[in-house]
Image (cartoon, rainbow, N blue to C red):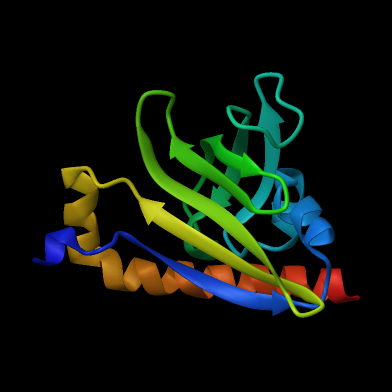
Length: 156
């Protein structure tokens, strides 16, 4: 049944840079505005100053790169240095979406996977059923753009 399909996607790009350098970039949310086509700035909130489970930040988003524009509250949900940085988007009580980066050493560099996963609540499943293909494609294009821009900085 289509309602049970995975509610997300991912993109992987190889970067000729060590894991430590890639980690420093993907886990510094204050730099996302340099790379993302939708999130043009972010800042740590509620006294958080860096990546750790439970840290909070807000991302300033321009949906689809054109609008509307809004702030999204986020919370770090997984944070293993050099391996994974993941955060939820939503309120303290209700997460709507999860975004993250997985890092894997490969050759002399790093395979970087950016991914998103919607929460499996019924409203999100219905949204995905109706608009998932279109939004999934937009997200995958945005993730590829983000990763390619990061790659350019890391390999410079």
